[in-house]
Length: 385
Image 1 (tube, rainbow, N blue to C red):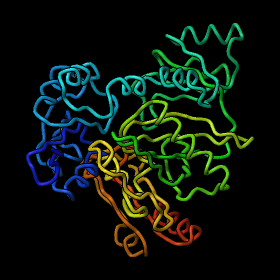
Image 2 (image 1 turned 180 degrees about the vertical axis):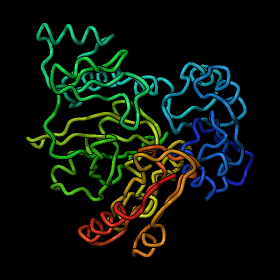
Image 3 (image 1 turned 90 degrees about the vertical axis):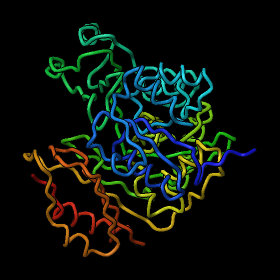
């Protein structure tokens, strides 16, 4: 008999209650699916949108294990969770998606890179190092060339755990810990393709998006959909994302971030096994949002259409530099008076410099018009304390 998820006693457990968790609970609420969220902060974004909130550390084995026993299916909104607990739950017959074995590969950027290499998936050249001292030694021995990018193998996110090393002076400020060194790629664009694969093997990719980054915070500032690329590159990017999800035998939603280099070659940067910042615009601009698609994939339901309804530009709403404390928003009326503007506030009560506080999606048939509106919003909508 087919399991009844909607309007039933079924409980979907979500590890992590940040903004991605919040938007996932809202999508589940549309279908009357009960959600239970585990997060170490009672002030997290999803605490007031889920059906049940559990305060606890999603990195702690016992906390995750006991949480998992009380729900019917476990999923994530952040990859830095206790994988060993998820493995034990899976062994005991609990549904865990994405699969803990795949999660173990993805949460370690070194294992990620080795996976690409072993499966003939294009990525930039790399080497793995256990310490910053080993990196300095390798530079001295001319085993690696400047400039390069250093990435911590674990727990880096939102621009953290990444350092661009341009010259020998930068070597004194290397990140501490096991890391990988990547060749610095000369970029034309940074792209992202979100792809979903259902437990029944069905696969669908979302339209390719183009990402523009804030140089100070190394966070996405603008997200443009559709990307301004040729049809050939678009097809190549979507095919690569599908190749990754199939090679990984992955079930759920996978964000594949890519570099488009100066020779129009596409290289995989990294992947995320969950809803992603590069898919927020899908809530309004695509027939099926990334959050609904994630639910469809992990529940084994038919995947939804990924057709673009209208072009869009998404602006990340970040805490202003120099402000920390109880959040205040400036320019709300001016921005909401702009046609096609959709505001999403994550519910974080305290702002910090460059903290993600929300996002604004601008819908417009003309991307040039959307860009003008995005520039206006970026200038006038401010998060202060």
